[in-house]
Image (cartoon, rainbow, N blue to C red):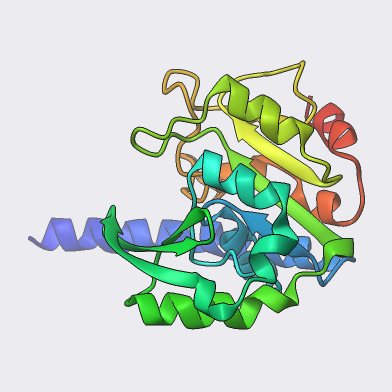
Length: 231
C-alpha cells in the first residue's frame, strides 16, 4: 500500500512540468490571437472547446449543441433563415439522442448536448443566435458518423461548395480534391476522425484539435497556407 501511494505521488510530481507547459502553451495561443471576436459555427463541441481555450465570448448559438452532417450543411446553406426564425420555432421534439434532448428548428434538428433540459437549450440558443457576426464567421465540421447519419463523400463535397470563405472540415485522411478538408493524423484505421478535444498520448498535453492552427485561421491566414505550413 505504501509503495502504491508513493508511486502515485511520484506520478503527480512528474506531471507538474507537463501541466505548467500546457498552461504556457494555451497562454501563447491567446497572445498570438489578434481576432478576438470570431463567430464559430460547429456541428459538435469543437467550437466551444476552441472558444473556451482562448477565453473568448460565445458569439454563436452553436455552443453545447450538435447536428448531423446533413442538418448542419442545410443550416449553413441559409444561416439567416434559421437564426432569424421566431424564438418559438425552436421546438422540443420529445426525443432523446445519445442522452441529449433534440430540438427542431424549421426543417432541421439540433442536438442539445450538455443541456440539462430542453428549456435550458431553448434559452441558450435564442439568446446567442443574434450574436453571430457574418463578417467574422468561421465554420468547423468533421467527417464523424452520427449513428445512421454518416458523413458521406457527397456531404464533404456539399460542405466544400458552401459559399463561406472561412470553413474547414477535419477528416481522417487526405482529400486533395476538397479544398476545405484538413487531415487530422491518428484516425486512419477508424474511417473517421475521433473526438478531437481528447488529448493525444504523450508527455505534453495536446489535443488532436491542436494539430490545426486555428489561431492563424482566425487571424486571417488562408487554410491552404496553414496546410502547407503543417506539411
